[in-house]
Image (tube, rainbow, N blue to C red; front, top):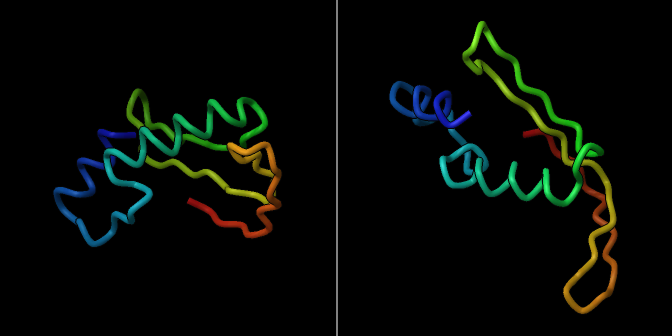
Length: 79
């Protein structure tokens, strides 16, 4: 994923959003994998051994806050 982001940034930096920058990829995908595990739908598309695209939906969910309270996140997005 980082390799694809680097290739796109080199030729079309206007096409990279904040969620696809080098640091955000590690943070968002790492955090999502840790928090949601196998229940977090995401997809990588590869051509031979090279990642050529990825996607991950952020669906409505409940988030546990540090104080123990739970917040409903009702918005959705596709990254």
